Image (cartoon, rainbow, N blue to C red; front, side):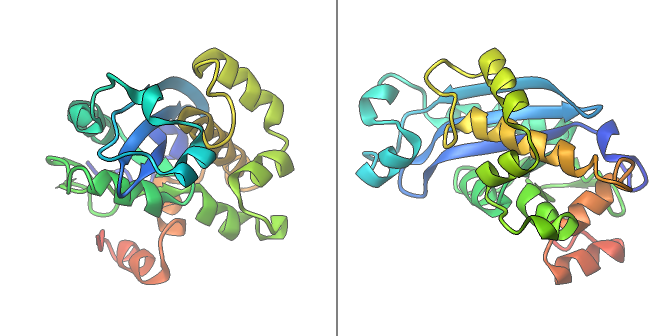
Length: 226
């Protein structure tokens, strides 16, 4: 499926955030789907850790082992994640973290549409859209590209809190909670694509500007390079 010329808002972009790490695996996921420039769906769940949650992790995301008692492992979510990747591209803020955690669970999905480049199908979770790299490339004057600071600088706080009240569990409506962060990154992506001259940016451009220079050059030559 080749869509190099389609504007970004015509293809579902599933903005994701994971809480967890290589030792525990994913203990919480959040996903907010953007289509037509709006959040059209959101989901989140807690998952059983592979190992006891370290105290430092708990200080960050606020989850402890008892919060996850009886939860299914993240490995039970295979069908959800393949379905998401089959219908659109994945995005995240500092996407390498999410990519590594997803690959740490399943090395690759079954064949899914490439959506960019020469089209066809690939067996890869990527290519990813990275809101941190896009902010650095498209709005370098902001200077601080941490998610919370971008929300503040782009004046997204009120909209984020409204979406969190609608979609997030009551005790998970802050940064370092998976769905809250996914919604924040989705709003950042929407705001970046609303900058002057970016409203009709193609999906391929978002992917290209989210990549390292060598990978972006490969994509421009019609290769995924992943």
